[in-house]
Image (cartoon, rainbow, N blue to C red):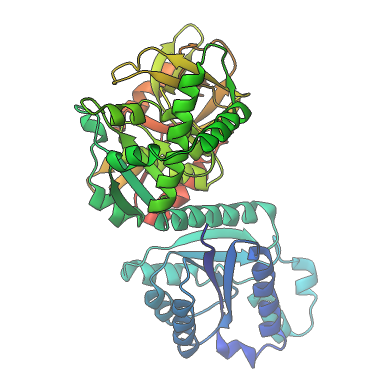
Length: 473
């Protein structure tokens, strides 16, 4: 994964430094505190210190452009002129998070008012004055058409840093999508109009590369897989899955051949995500390839290379977002509603994210893939019991795309043992309301399911990309 490059600038007013002894050094110490808390593996931090004049702002902007940052934290330490902020922000062209952070929750009024030196009193107050220039900065950035975001709080308060951490995770997801290389293998499932996607808009909005790749190439790779590699992959299957006794050795070897070939295919094209579907009818080699791909795709998904079936481009992106946030992201759709238990059953006919499965994923043989050509092995799993988040990406006429999000819980209970991914989901607004409110947003019929409640982070991700966001529950 590429490092996340972030910039940090404190802002202040040069005129204060000669008037209030120690104020500049105090504020520099606060900036150093933020730097220390932002520093971590996987992050390249450029701290430009305390910017207090327009000249310093322009110099900092050039330095941050050279550092190729993904996100700027603009720490308002005291009153600062908007003329200091504008040249800094307009030159770097990246999302800006304004940190409006006081050093403590409140001024100690009694101790403050006992101070004998009014100049010292003013200097002490100015160290708490971060809120003062934020409206001025917001006004100018709004008039300039420059998006910005805010965190308001206390410098070392946990609540404040939970919010900042969310922005970091959202920025990392944005960076992951900008470094994503999405392979499109085959063609759409004919007639699924909802999943047909303007790939140019995918590239514009998310910054991902798209590679159109051929099933014939994958089928050709399958022909040259050695018996040794096939046997090793069959052994891998037994390690990753609970292979059911009725799975034949022939089908396991067929799936293993495809799995090894698909790994080579992914490496050859340097893919970090994949959407696929191909009927395969009329060419036996291609039918053999595409009917034996589910185990391979499931293992890749668990290795942070999400694979979406049915050529579902938007859902491959959704799965990549969820995976980059550490939530997994398994390919799914409605299966049925359990009105008696007030639950929604959701799943798909593979692949699935086996790293977020409840227990070990089963492998079952299917004599028919419903609605598709061929037969072969499939997986049966439920998403881990506990909090989950659903993410769908839908077209939006204003912002090209929007995120549709819901939070709920994966709960235990009987599932359909049909060799598919299948889970039981409870939503706080009830099954009926969830289904109607979700559908009202105009999603495609697939979505990505991940573990944990992360709607707050997904909302920040949408803000960083300037796309729509709608939370159903």
